[in-house]
Amino acid sequence: MTDEFETDVESLKLDGKGIAQHGGKPLIIDGALPGERIRYEVVKSKPRNHIGRLIELLQPSPQRVTPGCPHFGFAQGACGGCSLQHLDAAAQLTLKQQALEDILWHAAKIRPKSLLPPVDGPIWGYRHRARLSVRFVRCKGVQLIGFHERVRGFVADMQSCAVLPERVSSLLMPLRELVAGLSIRDRLPQLEVAVGAQAIVLVARVLDPPTDADREALLAFGRKHQVSMWLQPGNPQTIEPMLSADADCLTLELPGFGITLPFVPADFTQVNHQLNRQLVSRVVELLAPQPDEVVADFFCGLGNFTLPLATRARQVIGLEGADTLVARAGQAAQQNSLAEKTAFFARDLFKWTLDDWNQLLQIHGRIDRVLIDPPRAGALAVAETLAATPTKPKRIVYVSCNPETLARDTAILVHNGGWQLRAAGVVNMFPHTAHIESLAVFEPAGLEKP
Image (cartoon, rainbow, N blue to C red; front, side):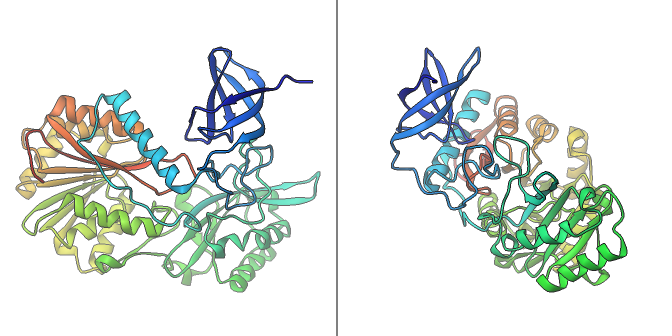
């Protein structure tokens, strides 16, 4: 019989694991919330901490809620797509805001002058992009399609998903039947989901070419469920629709600016489309470009921020590393009658230098405001350049999907470049998960007003 103990939970990690104390070392317990009294057992002892298993909840936290998905949990077999469904949504935001502030302080020794109100939106049915793993379990004779389990690396046995749009969630079981009947079911390791304003695309990653019968089955599924079927035989650049008529079916709508952005499944778009609309509006508001000003948009992608900013500024310069995205952003500008107010350039922004910045100034005269929206690796070279230039823009707005690299770049701007962190706050792009998206606003030190 294992030893059982009781304790009070002190704090919470972003991955949904509670932290308490046992034998003078931290005790990590999946599913326990701060303020709760629990009964537990120790399942593993490490040099720096213990790993415990929750046996009984003796006194629950008032912030504990019933998970919205039957596949959420902390036991073996539970889906690992979410980690915080047991915590009240408002408390999740507070947790992420505190985590952002802690990372900025511990990594950069910087606190924002003020906190931005969270950019918040729907917490269910929000996930318009997803990569679902596919596996046929021979010993059980079951075809599985979904996210990986929380505890193990197996594919979770999901019949539905509360964070996918309802139409996509309802396809999980029919998709099992479809894939199980394909001759290449063991050579189809994943399905990519991309939801646009008017269409749903399912991309089958295929390691072997589908047979004629397989192709007909996939197309019949698309017709029956009104989804567009695509194939990916190699890298993401090989993605193509099974029907040529579906090539331009995906669009991202920004109705507040009258803008429509076409995209393909391989393009990066924000997972949460409704929140993206709110995020774009907040970024334009915070950057506050004036009609006579020039804005530089680093890591512009498809023009998600570039084109809305162009409706307010004199000109917006979009800078992006991928030639294909630059071309597509230019086409979108043309389609939205903003070509004359935008200019797009393909540049390696991870090697951006002061010479590159000065060339922009020579071409465009000046850069008044800057937007930075990098991938998880952050914007180290861009931050170093903006720290070094004597011709400082009036404001920088930084959209981050990784608080660690945001903190690193913030330290460079503030400690090396004479900028100040005027404000920062979280963006609830991925409710119920540990992912932290955030916004930061920088201005040259000594500037008192926006």
